[in-house]
Length: 220
Image 1 (cartoon, rainbow, N blue to C red):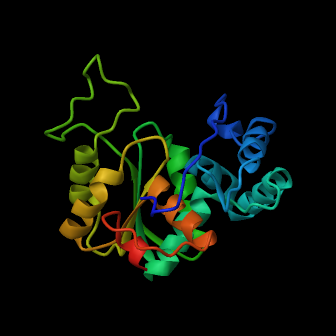
Image 2 (image 1 turned 30 degrees about the horizontal axis):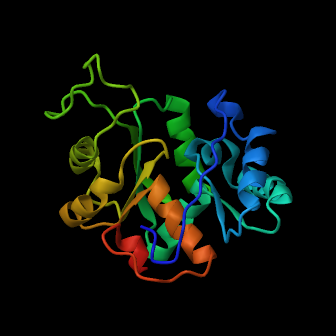
């Protein structure tokens, strides 16, 4: 997705518990490491944090992290997804979360987008059972291993016709490969955590070079 002249750099944050993932000091230290480079934008890539904190809490986290960023803007996945929906003109949205999302995390996602004026017409964790290509009981398969073909089949079957856009919530799985196929099949824009965060970071950095093959949001 990176246009010519754009580089991507990563710093990992120690995951102790999803509910406290954004607590200091680990995210602050990661931001400080990245800020030592000549960055234009930094993404805190953890969808669940956006859901747990809500829009106001996200803003407070952004302010805190930017104390360590040397003036570089810090962006969050939820903010990026909401911006993506708005850029696409989508108000009726469908949310698909990963199998390991708890029921309350799924509901927090609904509340997050509803609080920003979106009509959430569908929200659910993925259920791999019943998908002909899925083998969730494979002993060699990691519990976080979700295949793009499974995302495609689940969304194709579950997303209602009234949805104007789809968001796959979560940053720790492979979803890029499903975007083009689902957009063609369902006729609506598809956002994923990492794709829309990267789109938002490019825009915040003032990069408007064309990015093809990764969804309608890059043409918005």
